[in-house]
Image 1: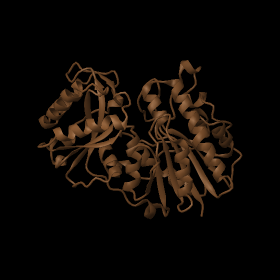
Image 2: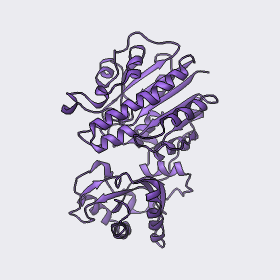
Image 3: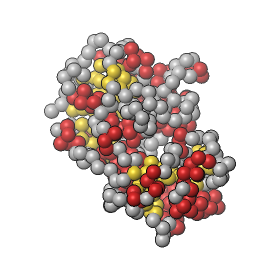
Image 4: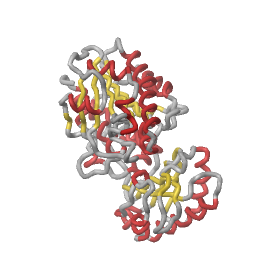
Length: 396
């Protein structure tokens, strides 16, 4: 049976930069494998973020997996809770909780770092454990995740005003004032009290760069129709981040764990490839997600983002292509959203993609693969959830 592989470089697309001679990081990167595939592929743009929804990886990856975020998305936190298999009630509210670095937790405070210096999981674990202890007797339960990405479960919170709090994602407000978010937190006093307690503890704790927690992306528990029933395919996801793992687990897909996969530029690329190819011996669809280009975009580092894209080409796309070259396979390369270095956050621009069929290569694709050539190819998919269906059909 034919195999389908989605290779997703999170945040790979971006905007032109003077420092790169008017090119994007993708355009400037050395990507011989992508450029080899482009002339033989169907290329185009896809709108992964529906109008009116925030351009986050939660929304965009849900679209790429074939689900309508406007129907199924409840929040960032619930997706990551699904990754951990948490037992939740339908009235619980689940928050994504970042460890962050603030100047101070006052109206004069500024968000300095959404990741607390990309804190490691071993560094974060005792901090979150202590926060969990401190939350005893409150409606909140702190749950450890990985690196800076953790959860805060608010029992019965969906029935409270906290469900409506409008808190900005911390990666969207780097070097910005946090006053409007504190005003929102203050409208639910129990949340503000937890924030203040956490801030006092973390500020006194000198073993890491974390000075506060930042709950956001709250929602009720996630439910998705089974991927196998929806598409008739046995599917799996490979990722370092709980967001993608949660989408996969909620959809009944296999979640392939890879030692050393960390969401950064030094992730275990070979382990991800090995896990994907091993799964394709028994399944038909695998979604391989690489976080590094997005993290580099948030850092505002054009050269590092360029390098992350080169590593994606060399150590993900190239070996997958080599392994499947003589199989009946469809290889799709794309990203979930733009993460322009100049913005240091996500935008809702339609993303470039290529679709390569190993047994039916095209001859009319662009010479190279980047944002401009994908746009120039003339194919536009306005509803992100339809990209997967399109790739499985005869016209791709």
